[in-house]
Amino acid sequence: MNDDVMDLDLLLQNAVLNIIEFDINTRHEMKTYNRVRPCYVMSYHKKGNAKLRIGDEIYAIVPGTVILIPPNVPHDHFKENADESVFLWSHFTFEIAGVIDVLKLFQIPITFKLRDSVEFEKVFMQYNELKQQTGFLPRTILRKAKALELIYLVLESAIRMDQDMVMKIQSRSFLEILARIIQNPEQDFTLAHFAKELNMHPTYISNRFKELYGRSPIQVQREMKIHKAKTLLKTTQLSITEIAQSLGFIGIPNFTRLFKLYVGTSPSHYREINKNKINGYFSKS
View 1: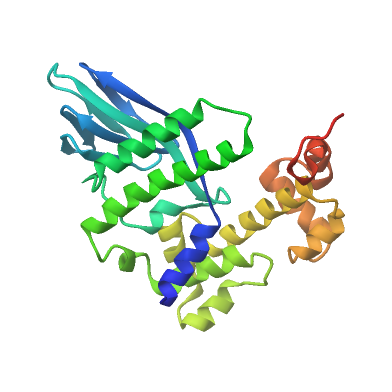
View 2: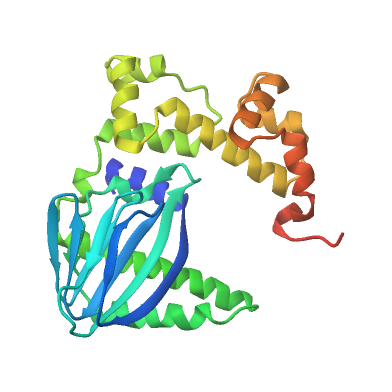
């Protein structure tokens, strides 16, 4: 396994898929204009024709086509005739600690043909059935597995369109920086440190990294620290001091100040309002 794939594998192990809503619709009319969602909009057209407009570009949507629209992208999705259209759709996020959008690591086209539509439809229906059932742990695990399988089938189709897509994952050096920060946010990373390693100017590294991933390396590190702190505060009984030290903070004040900046409250108050969630379970009050 080469280094690029190893770094990507590490990142994906830290990713969380959240399916916000999904459904199967049959339409003779479709008039969705200027829609903007803070999540991915995925639609697989099983039957019928439609159009997708993003900016000045119009895409013809035919049966077997997948639409994958990134967050916060205005778009129109409409029909120009009254024939029956059937489409399976989902709104979701796929992120690392709510910080990094996993799919932005790939150069996925807005529309592409689904490679195995029969398998996709089968898994979608299985997920739909499982979603209606609650209260049984193995079933919940299976539902999560089916959600990931849906993403796998979509990504596999997109990547098979372009065998070089994985290699087009952003510059090797920047992917490595991202993987290191995600894996060890508590380490003392600095732009000067990265600049020396890569023989690049610190400003260029910060700007290029932000262009690729939406945040500078230092911003990603801070947000990862806060994400980890929130988890430790909710799921362990470590003291505030122990948590701050484990995340590489020098002194409680620095930790508290950054935590309040991102979360809006102090670590102690955050723990207090989440005190019924120790070890991932709701305790009886």
